[in-house]
Amino acid sequence: MHFSYAQRLQQLPPYLFAEIDRLKAEATAKGVDVIDLGVGDPDIPTPSHIVEILKKAAEKPENHRYPSYTGMLRFRKAVADWYERRFNVKLDPEKEILALIGSKEGIAHLPLAFINPGDIALVPSPAYPVYHIGVLFAGGKSYFMPLIEKNDFLPDLEKIPRDIASQAKIMFLNYPNNPTAAVAEEEFFKRVIFFAKKYEIMVCHDAAYTELYYDGHKPLSFLSLKEAKECGIEIHSLSKTFNMTGWRIGFAVGHPKLIAGLGKVKSNIDSGVFQAIQEAGIAALNSKEKIVEKNRQIFKKRRDIMANGLKELGFELTIPKATFYLWVKVPKNYTSMEFCQFLLKKIGIVVTPGIGFGEPGEGFFRMSLTISEEKIYEALARLEKCIKYL
Ligand SMILES: *Cc1c(COP(=O)(O)O)cnc(C)c1O
Image (tube, rainbow, N blue to C red):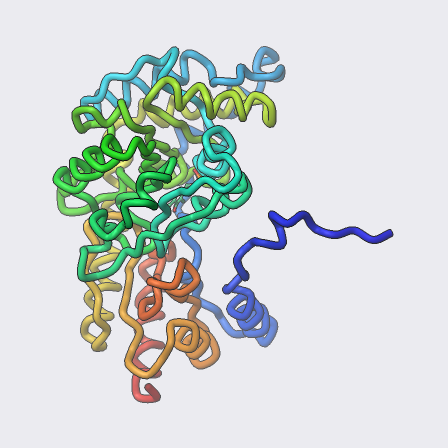
C-alpha cells in the first residue's frame, strides 16, 4: 500500500536538531560522558507531598472513571485561588478556567477553535515551536515577529504592517521567554492590549515560567493588566513551577468565550486530565511558598555559576531575571549550528542552536540549567579547554 502524509505534515518546518541528535547518539555510543544542556526539562524531582497525594488519589475508584472535560471544579477553584494569591487576578472557576493535558496541548489546540484556513497569526520568533505548528495544523499562516536583542527580545508592534495586523486573528506571546530568557514589564503588556483592541486580535500569553524568577523580579501575569481579560487568555503549566513535566497538567484562564472555544475543541478530541493527577495538581497549587522558593534557589545558584563562568571565558550574555535558560552569543565566525556541532564533537556538550527556534535566533545558543552544579563546573572546565581552538 502507498501511504502519503497529509499536507499539514509535509508543511512542517525541517527538524533542525536532527544533526545534533545524531552527533549526540554517536558520542554516547563511543562512551563520551555527554553533558546535556539542551533540553528544558527539570532534573529535580517533583516535591514529595505532591507524589504522596497522587498515590492516595490513584487508589480511589471514583478517580478511575472519565474525568470532566473542563477539569474538576475543585481543581479549577485551586487555580482561581492561586491566581488571586499570586497575581491578584480574580477568575470565575466555572467560566474562566479550563484544565489542560499540559500547556502544550492547549497551545496546539487553540488555533483549531479560532483560525480558519488562510487566517493570519502573529507568532514570535525565536520561540517555542508549538505556536507556529498549532497555526499550521489549523490551516493558518504565521506572521513572525522577530525577538531581537535591540528590542530586549520583545516584538516591535510598530513594525507589524497594518494590513497584516488588521487580518490577524491571534497573537502568541511568552514571558518570561523561552528561549531568550527575556521578561516583559507592564509597559509592554499595555502596548499589547492597546494593539490587540485596535485590531481585534486575541492574545494568547504562555506564562509557563512566571514562577522561575530570581532576585525578587516577580514576573507579571498578562491578566493582571486592566482590560487584558477582554482580549485574551493566559496558558499556565505546573511543569516548570513544580518540576512536573511528566505529569501532563496545565490550565488556560481568561476570556470566557475563548475558554469555551478551546473547551469545545478539546471535548471532541480528548477526555480530560486523570483526576488523580488533578488532585496532585491541587496539592501543588496549594504548596507552601518555601517549596517553590527552594527550587528557585537551586536554579539561581546554577545560573550564577554558569553565567559568571561563561563571562569569564569571554562569552557574551545577559544574566537572566527568570527561566532556567541562558541565551548566549555564538563566538565570531561560527553559525549557531556550527558552534553547537563543534561543542558536541570537541567536548561532548549539548546546547541548542538559536536558529532551531527561528531565523532571528541565529547568532545565539541556548543552555538549559537542568543539570547539577557538579556537572555545570565540569561543563565550564571543558569549555575552558576548547576556547583555544576557537
Ligand atoms: C516547557 C514549556 C511549556 C510547558 O509545557 P507543558 O506542556 O505544560 O509541559 C510551555 N511553553 C513553553 C514556552 C515552555 O518552554
